[in-house]
Image (cartoon, rainbow, N blue to C red; front, side, top):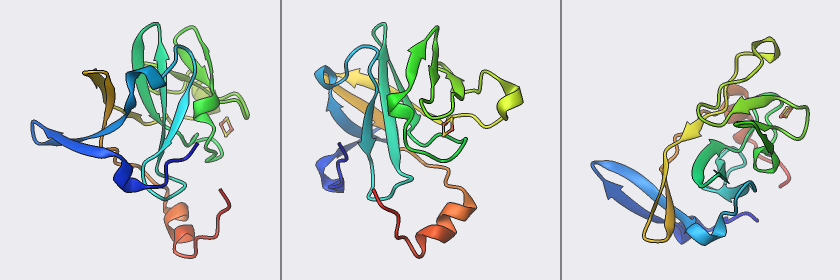
Amino acid sequence: MFNKDLNKFEIIEMNGKKYVKICRSSDIFDKKGKRFQIEDDYDKQVAIFRVEGKLYCFHNICPHRHQDQIHNAIIKDNTITCPLHGWTYYLETGANTNPKQGLKKLDTFEIFELDGFVYIEYPKFKIPKWRREYNENDTIDR
Ligand code: FES
């Protein structure tokens, strides 16, 4: 579920960079994505996966049709596939596996575990211009 309270996330600083303490390590299950709302804005959410022990963090908005379903992606052979129309991305880079589908990649964010918690870099979301204009009159249902 969405965490709409921005203050629920502790922000830490390491080496001059900000990180978000996003959840407990035990909250992320192997081969099951989880969504986190970082700020109270449809466009500012991430999807976190653990695959064979390694953590991955992506923008939860699929670049195909701008839908927030990456956390429900199907994980297979080091890729994740958006459940809506099948665009597939490499786990390691977020690059699209099929350039014929389009060159848009899924944005990735640094993620690590420390003392039983999961941290991600404070994400700088790339929000398309049309969404920024839409947000000025934001009425989107969530
Ligand atoms: S919205 Fe993800 S593949 Fe279409």
